[in-house]
View 1 (tube, rainbow, N blue to C red):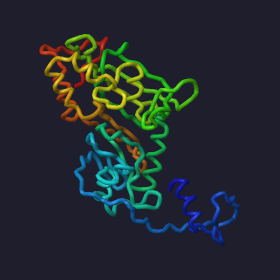
View 2 (view 1 turned 135 degrees about the vertical axis):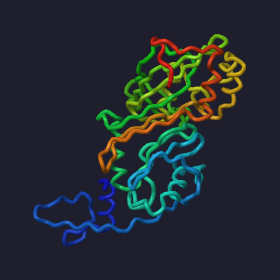
View 3 (view 1 turned 45 degrees about the vertical axis):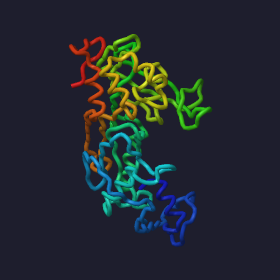
View 4 (view 1 turned 180 degrees about the vertical axis):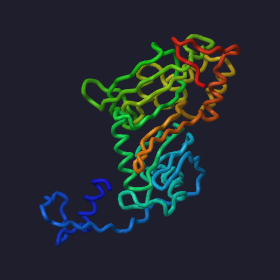
Length: 316
C-alpha cells in the first residue's frame, strides 16, 4: 500500500494499538503491536462504459492500452464520460482491487487527448505504487523507458540532441505551458533523434520525423520543447502557430493529407517498465496509427531515398 493509503486508514479509525490511533504522526513505540484492518474497497462514483479498447497486455495487476487519438484519459470538467477510465471500469470490473480504497484504475501517467499510443494503468494499490515510483524517476534508474514519434516542421540543426528548458504555466493562458526563465517553473529535458527528413516543395516546407525520449515527464513537454526550438509538431493546435501558412509550402498531395489532420502528429511508440509485482522486464511497441502512417507516405517525394546517417535513419 502507498503511504497516503495508510494515512487515510489511520484517519478513518482502521489502525489500533490497544486503542484506536487517529493521528498519522503518532510515534511508533517499541514492543507495541499495531493492527490494521482493511475495509472492502468502495465502488467508484465514475460510471463504467462499454467503449472499445486496444489492449496490448493485461494481468491481475495492470493493463497496457494502445490509446487512440481523441480519447481523454481521465474524467474532468467537460469530459465527465467517454474517457479511458470509464472504459477501464467497465472492462476490468471486479478485477480492480482498489486504488486508494476505491475500485478504480490507477492512472500513473497520461497522454494528451489528441496524442495516441501506449499507456499503462494499475489495477491495484501495490501495482499503482510500484509504477508511480518508476515514473517519478523518469527512467534514471533504468527501469522505465518511453519513446515517442513525431512529425515536426523543418530540419533540426543536429541529427540528435537534447532540449533542456524549464516549463511552467503560461501567465496569459493557464491552459497552456510555456518555457520559463531563470529558476522559475520545473526542470524538463527531452532527447531527440532525427529518423527521416521529407523536403517540401517550397522554402519552409521541410518536415522531419523524430524519435523523442523523455528525461522528465512534464505536461505538454514534447510539444512545448519542440515549438520552443522552432520545430512545432504538425497539427498542434496549441503550440503549432502558422500551420496554415506552412501547409502552402508542401506538395499538393501532402498538403491535402496534412490539412486533414485533426490532432497533433505525436505518438507514444514505445513503453518499457519493470513489472511492479513480479519484477519482470516488460517492453511494448506500437506502430504509427493510420492517420500518421498516411501522412508519412504523403510526405515522401516520388523517388524517396533513405536519408544518410548525418540526418538520421529511416524508421523500419
